[in-house]
Image (tube, rainbow, N blue to C red):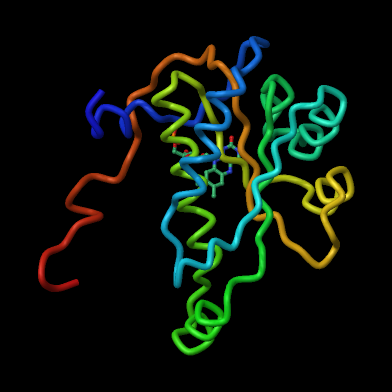
Amino acid sequence: MDFFTLINKRQSDRKFSSKPIEEDKLMRCIEAARISPSACNAQPWTFVVVDDVSKKEKVAKCAVSLVMNKFVTQAPVIIAIVLEKPNLTSKIGSVVKDKEYPLIDIGIAANQFCLQASELDLGTCIIGWFDEKEVKAQLNIPDNKRVPLLIAVGYSEANQRTKIRKPLEKMYRRNSY
Ligand SMILES: Cc1cc2nc3c(=O)[nH]c(=O)nc-3n(C[C@H](O)[C@H](O)[C@H](O)COP(=O)(O)O)c2cc1C
């Protein structure tokens, strides 16, 4: 599969089968996240794999609300990405340049995970809407740490969708804004 086909294949899957994920596939996705770029190579993340059935159910419930994320309960694995303290250079850079490099880093690592998953025919959905406090309690994550994202992972039963995106002329300029 060429790279463009892969990034076009990746989509937010919201329907999963109960088929378990092979350990080697899961660890390959973690490895893809591990080798992500990050500001000053700070790697400000810990990926917590939640695959214990009862724990996973409890974490999934943290993402479900009246209208949001009911499908998360179907996913056999949930990843919680914990935001770790960046190194000093990244921290200084964030302050001096007024940019939240660690959050950008987390987004890139999450996407590398998802792209690798897609290449292995796994489905994913990045989840930003969840009860963070409760996720931390369920996973023994200290109160002073943040969990910016979860990723639901599993074999998808969703159909491949055409991407809905802004047209090129609305997201692209050249040489001047
Ligand atoms: C930071 C972030 C948070 C997201 N949170 C959720 C979420 O809580 N629930 C959900 O169903 N999708 C969530 N998504 C998926 C987006 O809705 C999805 O990426 C977007 O609609 C584009 O569709 P695609 O991923 O299928 O290409 C999130 C995506 C990102 C990047």
